[in-house]
Length: 399
Image 1 (cartoon, rainbow, N blue to C red):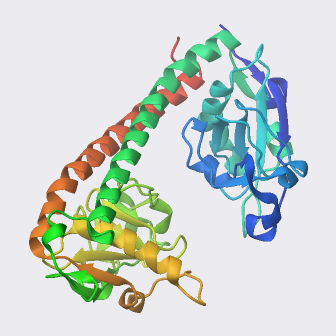
Image 2 (tube, rainbow, N blue to C red; image 1 turned 180 degrees about the vertical axis):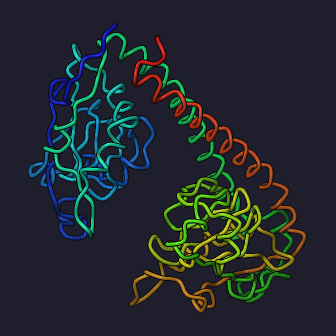
């Protein structure tokens, strides 16, 4: 069948969202029943957007617009050209364009995949502005691309969405596993309901045999660095280069935006950090904590943390998540906008006795192993989907 060149406005309704303010500038509009989707929600969504951080109340809704579930969201500022489909009725700002497919002409899933495969790359030539790139609705509508009839669109979208369904299922399983391990940590080491707690004396607020310390005392704090960006021989190699942009919302991080060569690591202030190194972001998105899923280098906006015995990397990971969260909530008179080495001296840390740390590790190690396996499986699913994507989108594969 022939694929006819068409623009997005020929396939459905297209319009920008409303509202330019941020939550901190208009708090009276927030906290109601209406989901308010932001560019970061689109960026971190899979095929569908079902999770969000902000909501509107009735006053917020009056100055915005409620878009129906099934609307394709396309970001045009901040995170340029990210796409995802609303899984719920929601509002969004003018940094997002909404596309509602004409059911006789287009399938929203197909348009999303088509955008990812072709338009997302082509819009780079339209971005402008030194401080922040942007993409206008007019520029988006200037793009014309070949498209098949709606029946073929649905067949193609069904093949690709099957991968995304598996990816989303893995993501939810990882989320539940991580939550279970974090709850176990809180139960044992925050609420002090650990095995044998009934027979353990509490001395000065901590169980007998435990020690009050700071995060600075229980780990080695190592720095990173960036090789010269104007030397091509240092970049695009096989060594993952972790930065704050690469953080994930669960334990392991594997995929990084940038990679170094062997020559790059030799000319860099970062060493190679092994699997299960704890990374914490010190600038940008501050206080995000991950475990390295493979050997990685790291830039200067992060710290690599290595537990001192009897602690280990698994206990350190969960303890730091809780410790940083506690420190952030109790920071008085200061904004938690950066971490320096001395910051770790302010983060309280209770070191349990050795046998309890070992028992906790025996419970959580299989959970982290399962997260490791699911993360690897998800990455392979993404790679398989992305290999199919361009071939299905240009008609090279018949369906």
